Length: 430
Image (cartoon, rainbow, N blue to C red; front, side, top):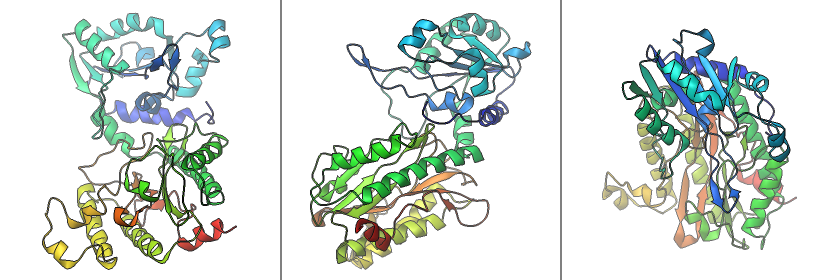
């Protein structure tokens, strides 16, 4: 791994939080992700399943975490199964977790080779009454590929039909949504790397540069700062491309007079940052561009103030909609008649601001976290309003990552990333 080893105290705390919510005589299983094939002997780069990483720190393929707090044998209360390594694997693939290193990384004392899983699992299942399956129930999930977890669940139900089963996801949604101090430090590191990338770009962008060249500059800066790279597929959208919300082709030339919307950020140690900035290709905002930009910035600042304990996600978005409506009236994009005749299910402001303002962020860019209950301290949300005007070939979005505080205003993890018009123009003029 490129990142510095994380203290196993974080993963020990995370396991304790999960275990306290398990029913008596129950086992929970968490599988690593598959390595997905492309064709021939090519594969995609391995990405660890965030849940097993959250609970163990194990960041390699073919790993299984077993939690059984009521195990009769104390050494079976926590078990991490890892792929057995040897000299051949070390030569061809590099170092893998030894049993000793697995304990050092995870804080788990009992480490078995993966080849022992079936035998050990059968033994502990004779003592258990319930098993927790780790299904994906994220509100934005759209999975069509059968995963390692899916195969395990099918196999387990066939082999142990008399056992009851529960879902891990509701517990994980609750505990992963509230970050530990160590997690906030890792997310701050990801944001700091993103800051370095953005400042590099401000001195690189000029008329006639290509979007993919900008993407390459970001990647260079991210990787040289111990990131694997992008936390998500980057959006480098100049001119009218900014009005395509998920524009990822990044293959157009940036023209003089256009704005450049960049939704791009670094990961660090599997933790995401999520930044959007919009800058003038030639280094200077026009009067109209500045007018719209500062309206979006005001919405972002007002929305940020609303992220306090007790806020309900749905009500928050409605309040942000009111602020945006006021700004759109001031920009002349809406008039009073538009507001009077609006559909309550599709407010008038949605013509120019059609996506949500905030989502949880953490190990996943769209992270786990409760959305139907009150916000809590140490939840981390993005704040990302935008105004999109295809007729003016202009799309502006601004986005920061903020931590809800027990008292007072949230902390902006991106407070050092330039966002004011004057600072952006000043850096670009160098």
